[in-house]
Image 1 (cartoon, rainbow, N blue to C red):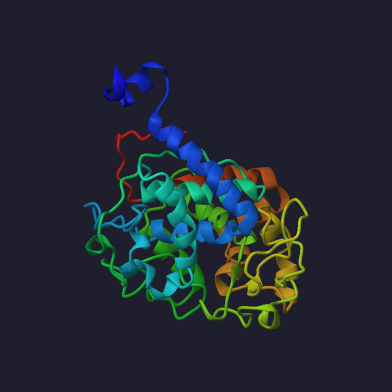
Image 2: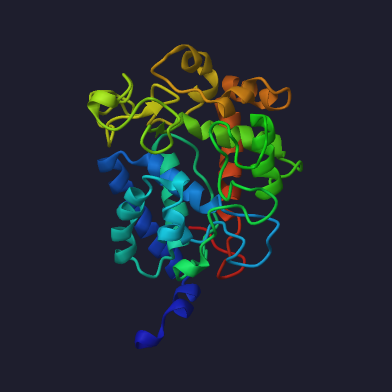
Length: 326
């Protein structure tokens, strides 16, 4: 059959060449994460690619979402995406090694792999996302429908771009009205709280968001983000880039400590707790799930995996339309 045998032969043998290529990418991503300790920024890149989705816009790619557009400067240069060019650089080498893998898939695969390697749940994603091909297909820096701001994910603290006065209203505006998380099972409230639990992983930086006093480098780091800190699940040394402030002490480990140890974050000046975190254990609806996850890590993992999968598919166009698993 020679070179003419491509997808058809693999199909007869029960294989999928696209899936095989993605599995190869996953192995390279694992090596990247193991050596760079870059779990958090890979998750952030994927969330910010998905986060432009607006359910009120039906056409692709104008609706935004998981389409790989964040690799282009119109989106990369948005204020909320400060620092994510580093994550793009990490993945560029892998994408060059596997050019048949779409950027949209690669970005979401990297986030799922990062969660898994940090000790979190395996996220059974669907793949086959189609990527945008040029900067003109990027979402704009402001919401296209209804809100002045918040083309992407929620703000950490007021003033809120959507015009909300309270953080609970802001979270519901962005996740519900804009991104389409609903009151169906699992509910919008449950998904918002579960996704917020990803703050168990990663940091904020003064230079990127201004949401904390801790910045780049050893001198500007909190006591939990210095170069000699142990934050990895396996207890090995290495924190990647030094500095910033974290929600948890073990910020390279994915567990339920964001929920279980929130009082530590509120009382410790070297940890971060923002208005959009505090509302989760104060709002009557949010706190039901906040305390549920504080007491049951398995429940958190189960709900988080479903919510992350949903987030990774927002606005995506798949080829084949049904997608495929790896």
